[in-house]
Image 1 (spheres, rainbow, N blue to C red):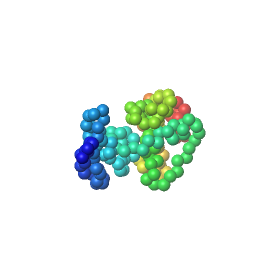
Image 2: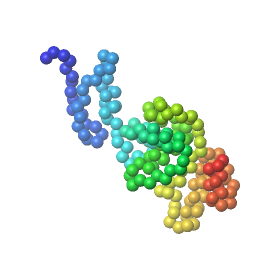
Image 3: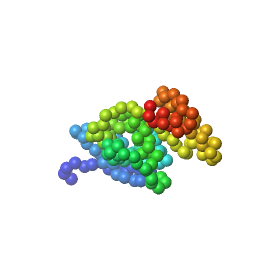
Image 4: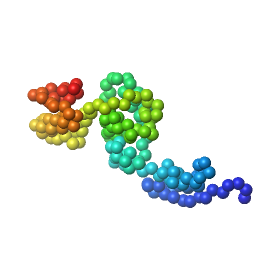
Length: 173
């Protein structure tokens, strides 16, 4: 046989799927580890945190171009999608984006081509999986607690007597 013979080995990824891994060459140097890292990214099953997906080096489909377009339009959006459709992950991406965690976006569209002025903003996330809402009183107490906690995390002292006043202080400060 003439030409280069590639060594083939059978491997399995994190999900048990079999694939063939050949000897990759880059600049004349074998680079199997890079090939393995490219192929074997874990799927982020049950991960809804953008930070966790980055930390565990999981597969992330880059949708930052669409988020950038959304933000550039500057209008309100109502995000209504079926269960398990990525709403919480998108909120997590927005949270990291507005908390100026630029290092998480290094290899994504928004960092490379987004032309975005990276600044830190206060972020208010009300997660009703965490906020108690079985009774009206429990909902009110839980909202007061979470708004106060968010204010404290952003160094904003909330003084308003009613929930709507504190929420407004949090948003407009």
